[in-house]
Length: 122
Length: 413
Image 1 (cartoon, one colour):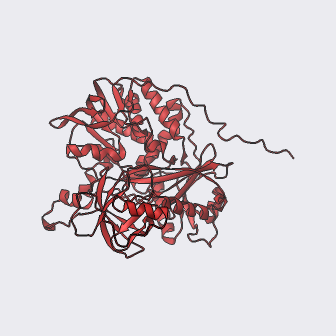
Image 2 (cartoon, chains in turn brown, blue):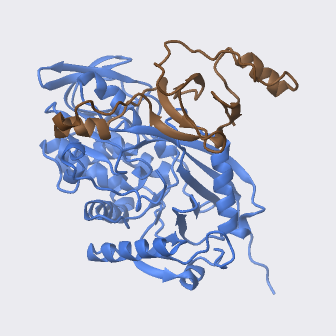
Image 3 (cartoon, chains in turn orange, red):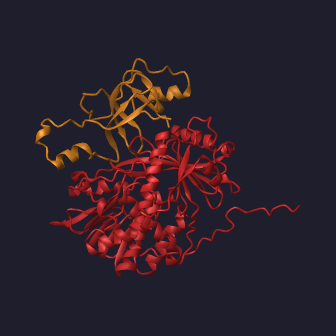
């Protein structure tokens, strides 16, 4: 199971999280001015890239807070994790964190190394 | 007392043929290029030949024929959908399934063993009964059975009332069943190839050649190929292709996992699905228990998914079928399903007059195979949507005429 790096709680197992689809979908600034086609695109149409995808996740059984992530939809690796409201990062940015687990086991070791890189626990 | 003769699993299966089709060099131009050599693409090519006499056809496949979701699905065929648009279409497909073995002159092991869609809550019961009545109005053979009825049809289902999601009853469609997916694909491919259709494998379509509002061909990893008409049957990869034409398609691709057990003696006489606990089970001809789950939540093209989904699916299966508890898991796999906002497919015309769409089947594409082959071929050949697929046009997301089948899709999307 993949570890996901919650910005508030640190790396936790994937089944603690919920998925919220594409990130950065802004509510229309002037909703009254939208025609049916524009509404349809706001409500129904989302990107579906093979590769890096900015999306929303929620740490359902932890802090219950939403955050954004850039994840590769082919390898499933998380390339970056960042707060709601922050702009999408250009490059993979997973800074080593103070709360990263100590290198106590091969698994933890692998994660500590991977903290600079995309996480991958599969 | 004589002992029963030991049964060799799979002994009654037909032998694999040694030769099914050629791998021709692509020509520079075809009347119709079908993008995607899965079940839908192959069936479309077959019906273009059979119903419209169009044989100058290429099916272009990036991998090998029927190696995508056609090789990864759980082979269930049924037509007990809620809305008229869906049940009419899937029932037409079921009619074609019933004659398909003769039509293709090829064994497909279509087995009409029935399907039970379980209800676990009072609301499930109400929704199920509503669906049965809707089905009957559409002449689909559906009935409501209570928990005892479920037990009678499939004795290994746990109908005790002390489990977390007790079985309160089920909808039952006796004419539903399963077929052998590989044989279905091979049957279509063989017949199409015999008629002169070029089945071109290991060739990826990377884009289109256009002139004004017409598509004049496809760009491929083996050079440009001209086309009078282009029929897309590339499932989750459709939007990647149409993006460059400015056609946005509301698809999200998700992994959908399935698995099989070791071979067992016949224990499971029908198909059992449960939308609430996310498992559906049938027993393959050889004897494996074939099980599917709901889709994985996140978008993914990796043809695999996380283990905890399988864990949940197994927990549900063992609760519903305690007899499975000691069965060994043989293998697991994932497909990539193209899910739309209303859990119905997208079929029909595009702003390019000779480019046709077929995608968005989500978790239900296999059962549609002959039905979509027939109706999509009609759409491509005549340039007019077949009446059975007309409701599934792309513009429904703007008009609001959705065909909302999340409930009857039987898998949580």
